[in-house]
Image 1 (tube, one colour):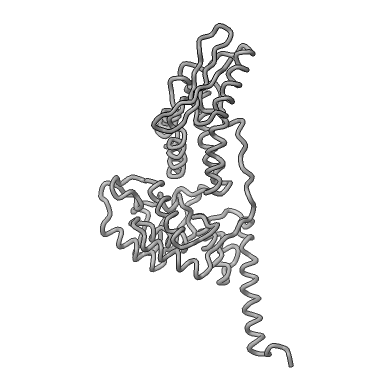
Image 2 (image 1 turned 60 degrees about the vertical axis):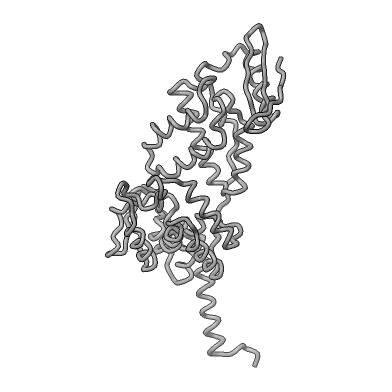
Amino acid sequence: MAYFRKRQGKKGTRWQAVIRKGGRRSQVATFRTKGEAEEWANEIELAISKGKYLPSHEAKRRTVLDLLERYKETEIPKKRDQVNPIRYADFWIKQLGDLKLHELMRAAIVEVRDELAKERAPATVNRYLALLSHACTIAEREWEWMDSNPLRKVSRLQEANGRVRYLSDDERDRLLKAAKASTHPHLYAIVLLALTSGARRGEILGLHWKDVDLKATRAILHDTKNRERRTLTLVPQVVNELRKLKGVRRIDTDLIFTHPATGKPNPFYFDNAWREARAKAKLEDFRFHDLRHSCASYLAMNGATTAEIAAVLGHKTLAMVKRYSHLSDEHVRGIVERTALKVLGDGND
């Protein structure tokens, strides 16, 4: 049978589950809530009743921090986009890093998932879950650190189709003003680059100086989402900002956007500055990825064809770009209506 003890520690209230059944020695695990403790106890007792072995030595000895630090060292370097996976791993370390692997239960993951969903889009939340799931699968199948992957029972969020949120002229002005006033030395350049080139967050944060030609006003993306090389056009405002950054760049790294103190990528440092600027600009229901939508929307409203927008964004098919076609249609209709009003009057003769 299991019993539960409420504990007070440096990290606040914790619930400890203690199991002793069938003459086996006690199994003890600590959780943030009593519900998580009860779920763990139920699963362990069910496993015992079915004759399954209790958590392995490694699962009781290793933590989520151990798991993700090894994953960052051995698995993330194999990925084309390394910035986002590092960010996802660091997020889980911050949230659940102190848990032993046998304490990593579905309830704890779902709680973090639901909190993350308040700030992030469903597709982004699912990417966070996918990384943790892959790490647990590797730990189970290859490292023998875990007996099973708890994320197999965690539902992914329903992803919306065709969301288009772009900045109005007033919103754009407020955001650029807030980004320029930010204490983050790179935020203004990053926002400008996303807004004018349509580049993704990971693509921008992964840019190297060797891939940027300020004289030719272009930057080359080698590792993109669709695995095809893409060229970004750098508008004069972006070129000016990059010239300023190049004048004070670090010599120990070729990355453009790094933490000023360490010279290393630091997604949390950027994310915090982005959220502050977004709040200061009073933007609602707006994510960083929506800067890419804004770029595409501006192109559509200024007469760019679907194929041209696809080329700028790096889409392989036109299907993803068709969501912006109605903006082009509305823009053309507006021109026709304004012209007719000027030439023919308001039609009330």
